[in-house]
Length: 68
Image (cartoon, rainbow, N blue to C red; front, side, top):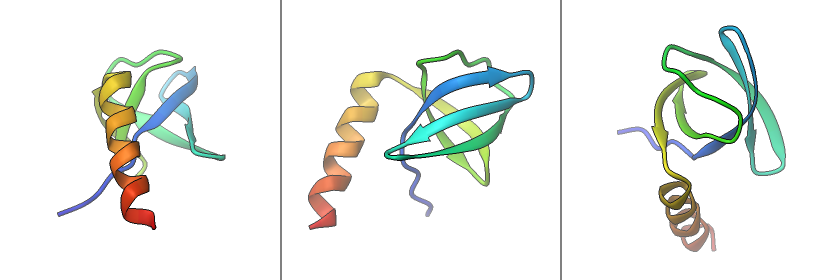
């Protein structure tokens, strides 16, 4: 089983998307339609699913609890 951290789309350029994950940024490919501001889950540098902002924040909150 894999764990993926929600990331927010900050730019879309054809097939490459720039994502914000905490304080760092990264790029990923996409096969689903995304736009700036969307929250997504990635695996192997490819967006696999969009999630709502509420879902993303819930996941991040849970992960923060386990960081301690």
